[in-house]
Image 1: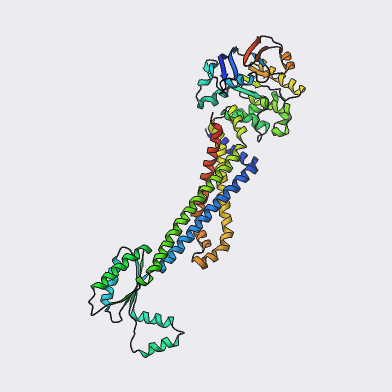
Image 2 (image 1 turned 60 degrees about the vertical axis):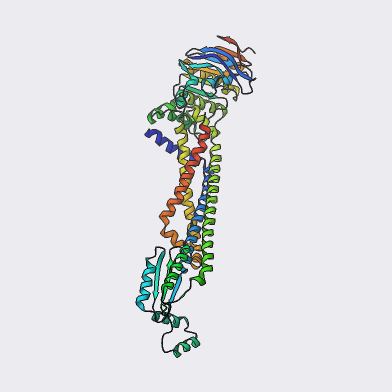
Length: 306
Length: 227
């Protein structure tokens, strides 16, 4: 048993070297397939991150009237925070709002002069609310509207809720995000299927050149496992080498692309590659090995049927 | 040792028959030549013995074993009892002469020590000690066939089956191959060989079965080539 295993392993390596051109062709195709799969993974990551960034920029702002009592504001803040859909609530006090206004308009002398004319701070406090999902803003907005209706008409607290104003752009964004996710999922699926089929066919052709050999092995009384073993090992070797090659290809590419994606998508792909190297290595080499092994096993099986 | 019982092979179209009601037996240590024109059914007959082809009717026995009732998983074991030699040599192109012979032993599950001892022995029996590390593409036709013979005998099979072993060889290589087969037979191995080389048959002076149209038409104990 041990002897047979050792012989199969040796035959696998020897076959790999003596069929160097065929091995090279298989590795080449498998590398491209894995590169495509890897590129799709990076693209998905990029999309995912940029969607998250976009989503974090969407919020609902509740502006309170300047003389709204602090305890009332805190009550509403606590109530909003208690909602299951809400991810984060950021409170900006009247003083902070004024400071922000000054900062934003520091080049606008007219606006600052107008502010000087007033003897008190005209700005109210506000809450910036972020939901966990863009689709959940609707329910948060509805909750806030209900709060507003409960108020005493003569002493209003909430001055304005800007969700209605942003509603259309939020809706559009939500549908764009969903469509992009769906499209990238379909593209990933198609690329995966194509990569699997191309790899399978290439390895099948590689083994087609060995069909005579397989027939001879059977004639001298080799068992099916003894014949299949070296081809299975070669499939694994193709997959492993291709996975490593694809990873190496990404390195210079991502050094170049990284800063560009950082500027546009707020994610440096090269940093992502370095941080998640183990994971990416596992996925690419793993897919490669499984693909190589399954392809070669299926291809040899054709010639082992009696 | 080999017994054909009323064996016929009819192809799927239902009309052309490769073998028709063939019955004969081969005793241990015999040297049997099967002659006939191409298409007479010689190769089909040999394929029946190694279970590469199935009969439409009849049975083929190896000793008491019905060859076509051997389960698929046991076929490799059965084939190890038979050494096969072909007109086109059927050597593994990516293995050296030594490795080709050794492969038959590896497939048999022999130990490295046995392989190291028997392979050089088999190669020297066919007079190829000096070409052991050449690949088939570096050998002449006669040398390739001698490698194939070494591979066939290295596991000490009960029987050697040779399908036109001299078909691709020049007269000198033919003579050498026939001498080697006779030597193997003299050492006690049964040999069944097909050929259409008259000189070979007359040289051997052993049993000759003549086939025509899938039937056995003559069976002479010390035959000459009559066609």
